[in-house]
Each structure stands twice: as structure tokens, then as C-alpha cells.
Amino acid sequence: MLSRKIFIWAVLVLIPSVAMAQPEEVTGADILANSAKAYAKISRYVGTSAVITRMVSQVSEAQAVDGASTANAKIEFNRGGKIKIEGIQTYGDRYSIISGGKTATLTYMADDKERIEKDLDVERAIGSMSAVSADAASAIPAALLDMRVYSPLNTLHAPQLQGFEKISIWECYKVVDFDSVRNIKSTFWIDRESFLIRQHLTEQGEMNLEGAYLDRPKVRESLEKTQEFMEKIGMKSITTLHIVGIEEAQ
View (cartoon, rainbow, N blue to C red):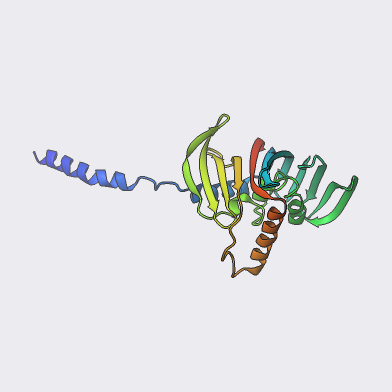
């Protein structure tokens, strides 16, 4: 009888202990932080980035224009700063960025002529191709090099986990973030095994700068210039789908 009471007492003690040992629920911020750490640990990476951009512009009160463009990049990276990026810009011109670790050489087309810029800062070289490649040349390289400005993993506000989805054969976390000032919704599909980005979607509408970044004049000035450009071309929305192909990551 006594042994039976001891057994029941042990069970009652162990049950809450097991419950307390359960892991905490993972958050969207946790997943993207783990993704940034995964890229920081990679010693060699080979992959491709293909970007499809769709822009809707209002050319008159009665007419809107829906246009699309594509860009791509082939990326070879070795830890220590060695990186080679080759691709095609949104306008169809080829470009390349090659770095041996300290500086980079940028080759691109301008006015139907090939231009070569040597001894550039690596971040500057990658950043200069960011817009014209719709981030094909910058998003993954910036994550690998932990560039705070250009890495999509470092410019987030309140990322939320919104379940799981399959991208091709890969099981992924679906994480959504929203920037209310720039009016940008960012959706990430992060591989549940490797924590690398399999797909990234950004959707931007008209910006709302009322009271935004008043304490950071340079940031606000940059946003105002972007807003002015958007209004000039009548841009109402822009959607960018970044599809990532990974051949090697170790």
C-alpha cells in the first residue's frame, strides 16, 4: 500500500516537471535571427537568385499601366570575403562583381559601353547593383556578409510567424513583416532544416511619411526622395518576388 502511494506521488511530481521542460514557442523574430546566424556560419555558398518585379503605375485618372521585369544573379562565395556575382540587370544588361576579400571590381554597361571600376569597397560595389538588379545581386550576398543596410534579414520591424508552407520540395516557415512607414509587406519562406531563405516577397504601396523618422533627418530625406520619385512616375504599387536556388551551402 505504501509503495503504491509513493508511485502515485512520483507521477504527480513528474507530470508538471515534464510540462515545464517543453520548449517555448518559436517566433518570427527567432526564425529570422536563426537565418542570419545560419548565413554567418556558411563557409562556401553557390546559388542563384531570380527576381520578378511587377509595377503598377497610374499614368492618368482613367489609365493604369502594369509592367513586369526580371533580373538574376549567380553567386559564388567563400568565407574570408571572396565572392563572385554575375547576372543580368532589370534592363537586360550584364554585370559582375568580383572580390578577392578586401576590394572588389565592378563591371557593368552604361551608355552602351562596358565600364570597369576597380578597388571598390565590397559593400559599395554590391550596393551599387542593388536597385538595378532588384536586389538579385545584393540580398543573399548581404546576408552572407552580414551587411546591415542591404541584408533583408536586418531591416525588420515586427516579424510574425504565419505557419508553414512548402516551396517546391522544401518545408518552410512563413514569416511576415510590415513596415507601416514605407508601406512594405515582406514575406519570407525560411527552410525549416537549414534556416536559409528559399523565397522572399516584398509588396509596397504608397508611402506614409507623416511624422516618420523626424529624429533621423538623413533617413527621412532618403524616404522623401523615394516618395518624390514614386509620385513622379505615378507608381501605385511594386511587387518583387525573389526566388533562391541553392546548389551548395556548407
